[in-house]
Amino acid sequence: MRVKNTDNGLIIVYTGNGKGKTTAALGLALRASGYQKKVLIVQFIKSWFTGEKKSLEKLPDIDFYQMGEGFVKILGDKKPFKEHKDSAKNALNFAQEKISSGKYNVVILDEINVAIREKLIPLSEIINIIIKKPKNVDLVITGRNAPDEIIELADLVTEMKEIKHPFQKGIKAKAGIDF
Image 1 (spheres, rainbow, N blue to C red):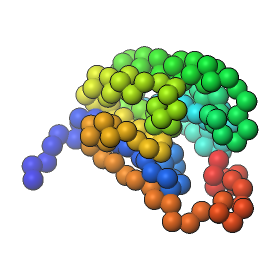
Image 2 (tube, rainbow, N blue to C red):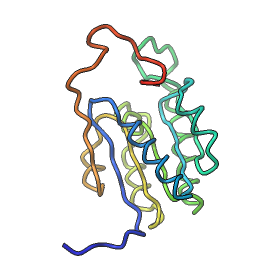
Image 3 (cartoon, rainbow, N blue to C red):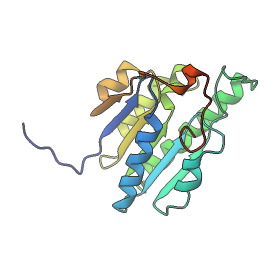
């Protein structure tokens, strides 16, 4: 096998029903920051305080934006669907602008697969971002149920598979572990 030029950006997908998709992406962000690479993280669903938000905002090479309205149609969501949709569209436009700026080496679109699945944003717009991204940008896409079209375009796809989860025992999400 021939080794390809590592200056070309990769399309990386973390998907599946298991825990660890965002955690893997954030680990990658931390690693990239250690090499003085400029990282952008846009969260499409999350809107609450998280330990990663507090920690990553201290790092000068990582720009972190939570742009979602919270969970859509689950866990007591009372927000109008249009509000979720408008926030996702705003996040997508923001991400497109930042990706095109040439400022970032790594861009993480966290939970964007969920935004696609919930019909907050069209798949075609994400495909367009992937196809038109600058050649040197590594693009990381997270969330359950990655569409086949995104998987096909990706260079690396990791599926997190749930085998056992504390929630099955009635244990709620834990600060510092889950958020």
